[in-house]
Amino acid sequence: MKKQIVASGLFLFSFLLPLKATASTFSFSGMYVFGDSISDQGNIFNVTLEATGSGFPPPPYFEGRFSNSSNWIDYLAQDLGLNPIASTNLTPGVTPTQGVNFAFGGATTGIDNTGAPELPGLQQQIALFESILPPNQLADPNALYIVWAGANDYLPTDSTTFTPFETTDQTINNLSNALDSLVEIGAKNIMFVNLPDLGEIPRTFNTPLAENLNDLTTVHNQQLENLGQGLGADINFISLDINSLFNEALQGQLGFTNVTEICLNNLECAANPEVQQQFFFWDDLHPTTRAHRLVGDLALNALEPQPPASVPEPTSVLSLLAFGASGVAFVLKRRKLMRV
Image (cartoon, rainbow, N blue to C red):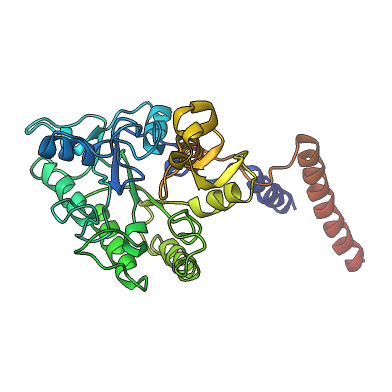
């Protein structure tokens, strides 16, 4: 009888224990970023500055970012207390201490770059990361690895060497290879970011491409979610849902008063930081820094410890335990009566 009561008590108490800790409870030792212009902190600017004497994108773009000020990687890194350097600022023989940003504007998920053929795609970015690892040493297991790419695979561009994909097959295969490569070299905390509806951005909105691009986005995001399945228990696959945030903004739920027009096309907006706060889009592809701030906040929230779900209030806990004990007593009493 005592064993039954104790067992029931332990069973009930198990509901009160906190959920299993995940990678989000860890402190990251560094950040390694792979992707395109949305995450580029100055790589394409540095390359074009060295090649032509004029960095791209130029002012009023902010310090090589494809926005009017800091981008989401800037914000997330600041929140995490990290300072990853641009890959174009790497010094041979010097191991970075807080991570590296390999993202390049124009990068596709493969080996192509829609900005210029000589610039890297996602696969070259990861290969470069592998090449800077010390001999016989794996990637830092305590660092955060971020992959956000895919939009340039589908969107119309000015590239003369790359034709946008009409299905998601190659893009998802490329992203799967990227994930496998990161896992193979020792990455443990890996964040993959999905895509906003590509038919709703200024470049494609109300064009014949819009519906098909939205359909591609839906399939892409569904398949991207599946990439994390089947990974080992020691791999923390963090899926960041930008698509929902994007849709909330376009529906007027996040405080932007203009979610359709391009800030750079509006003289008042382009010249006035206060007006820029009201615009979601900086140019026909990229968000303003205020929108980037929201993306950074979303990413940080995905990394922070989450409170246990459905934890009973203390009074409810006592009631639950009391009910459990009385329930066990009732069952035992009934069995005794039945034997009489």
